Length: 197
Ligand code: VGL
Ligand code: ZN
Image 1 (cartoon, protein in one colour):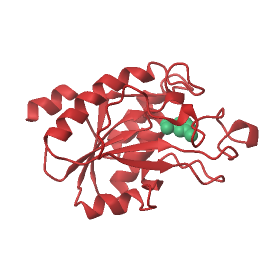
Image 2: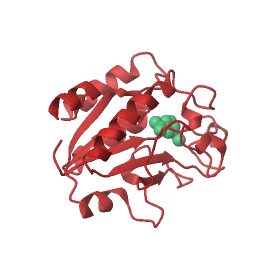
Image 3: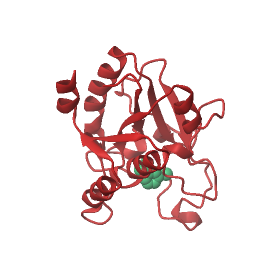
Image 4: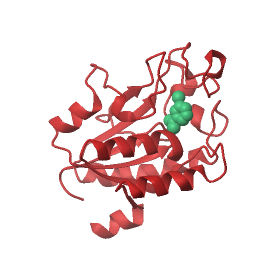
């Protein structure tokens, strides 16, 4: 990996895992794989970002207020916490998103750190040019974050073995992968990254 790379772990939260209110099929299977990536990026001294869906209780994102989704990832709730087995290092930068009650905001690029700094500003300040990302869900937040990364001029690589999709309609995740690849997003796996070392 280049020294201008960073890892972005997308929305690995209880509500997106089995037992959660918007469970992604096999969502929790990404956790041990992501822990492998965390170890690789830590060893290389590269920054690690973790985004979280962080909704107010009332938002047009939720079905009960006209949106598409069951109530999930409400600020401060158990469902909004990261999966307990995700081994985030203490210096990981948490990016919260989805706080605007009138927008869906799937992309982590719309999110901010605890002090309000937007993700694109944080990436630019660290000279990040290549973003590796994986997590939940392939067909929503992973896809939108990857596409927005490309629009920001970054090299973007999706970690396919560390991502799973909602698949509301069968094939959504596969179509998301095709759409990302057409936009110039690269795909790799832990094996691929380790072979680079
Ligand atoms: C997401 C659906 C609703 C995601 C967030 O993180 O992919 N999906 N809110
Ligand atoms: Zn959401």
